[in-house]
Image (cartoon, rainbow, N blue to C red; front, side):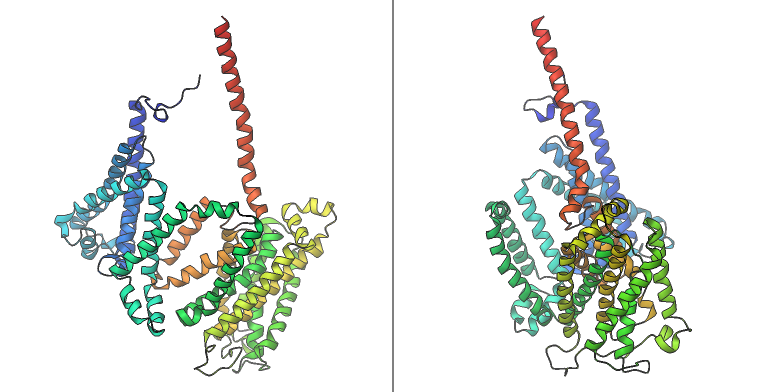
Length: 590
């Protein structure tokens, strides 16, 4: 008969020596992995560079937090390997100490060998940071710190969920507000909240009082929400009551969006306008890729057609040909981009899969090279591009909509209109035809779907949305260059669709915020922000392959195999149990 593990049964025997040895070896592997990560973060410069960015002024920096997180994560992962609470704490401490030993070894090796030939960051400043200013004699400090932090990670692994979540979210709240302290402090002072801003925020980072208040508020909310079971209550509500709650929440969110540029300043307005621009592009590619399943890596070409059309028709520089107002040029840009979509779609309608991606990639590169070539320099400006593109509305400097604010509101309005159109298209007959083509072209054709017309319409509508995004970009930046039409624009748009959720309109918005907005807010870490960008992409694809906010169809498709596997596995267990029961009855009868 199948025996139950003794650790799971009260009064069961202790794990065997072999299983205990395997557990300790697993802990050592976790600690060594923490060592590799910690040394890597130190040598590539993340710890010393981020150390210049305080989170809580005079208390802790971003660099110190990055090192502590590695040690804590090692302890937390090790604690999950334990069969008892006491072992969990011991495992966590051991893994943390092993992870810290790598930093201690780095300090010792750095005193004997000059590692600056390997990396410029390996110097006295790094060693002083790793030893808390003790110098070479303090090489033991990372091991002791790793032991302490690993023990903390082990404790976190065994405490109940509510205090663990409260502690985690509270610390995350301190980290987020500490990073964006400068962004919040300046508009608060300008808005008459100077005393409050100075008590909560230092010039860089939070004050100790601000950190305490942030932790209390965030952790208190988590405890209260779990105590009142708010998520379960919301899930149990009738649909009518849910809608009644959604409406005031939407109104509050809309007010925050409308007032954001006046509260947080022009930088936030510029970032949100850029996010709205990528939302426009995302809705366009979501039709071509998310609904119709046609991978288009030359999507930036339609973006460029829209941008250059608006530039030529509105620019007051030497290359301007009409000096039209922006609002008259936008429809022309959309129509021309749609025409280019049809021009591209016709010759490649019969291509599928990877071949389609390569063909569209070539088209995008052709447009970029032509825009920057000497052949069209007299028309498109060549490498110098087209400049002196006026804003949509000329306003005096003291007007509330002066500068990027008007582009902010204009981009939001365009994004809302395009979102409505994309939603209606998805729920329409043509939307269902696109999804049928995405699943299987041969079956869709057998069911009466006209592949030529349906595919061509997908290309043309997607190109129209991209042209509108290019028009907004030209007005936002005030110029357009061939260097702006790189393949990375197409890749970013495809990535935000996949991360947000294929075929999901809300997923496009969330993906744009996650992949475009957040990296823009971290421009002060220019050297490393794309490193974390890549790590975030890997993490999302590993743990949320369906996307952050997928459509119901995509979620069902990706989880069907897992559910079927569970259904197939259950009868096998039942057969085994039936066999054991029959054997037992036979023994009793004998």
